[in-house]
Length: 113
Image (cartoon, rainbow, N blue to C red):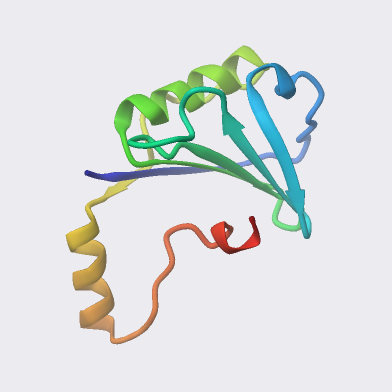
């Protein structure tokens, strides 16, 4: 299992048209987009948009789930790569936490929903 992540600056985010492919939730200046058919195990694919930072975050535990996120967003007018920016295995994430001796967060938005 690898946690696949990408982030993109998006100053023109608009939910119009996204509801065809995503369940849309909102909490405290953050949107959560759950793709139909990909947000459940084993993929856990989600998109978050932070209004304050004007940043779109794509996250999935499988590469096919990540590819589906990018494809669905591209159908809505985006031009995103189907390849994640980074991939982190859980064991390496835990190792990094232990070495740095501090709490690390891959997805800072999960606690909002």
